[in-house]
Length: 159
Image (cartoon, rainbow, N blue to C red; front, side):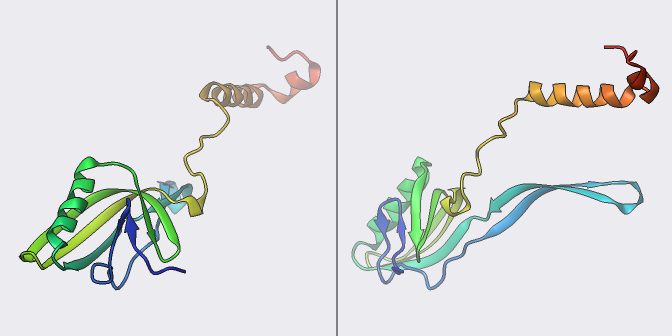
């Protein structure tokens, strides 16, 4: 597993690579609280946390590197993020840099919103049923439930 951090074609060097990277997130869900304390929980899938890290640039190109990353933030494009065998498609949400001493030293903090995590599969696919199919199915179920059992048995249930 390579210990290289790359963001949208920009490769961080041994000085600018942070000592730690984060990953993970939450489970998106809706919690319906019912009378009597019961709950119905609808899970909606993974909700990736932003990938955030801090570091420093050291060298004659430190200021140019910070400007390049800030330009990527301003562009707002979906770009690749790779580190430690991980891959994400991200958008730079925040990039803050501080020039400590020109041209040699600067610090930065960056936060990337995860657009897609291929390790979790295709989470953006929608169910194959259309809204009309779902409503028709629900109406059919409701009509069957509302018809008296003796009418169904006699074959006289209204259509």
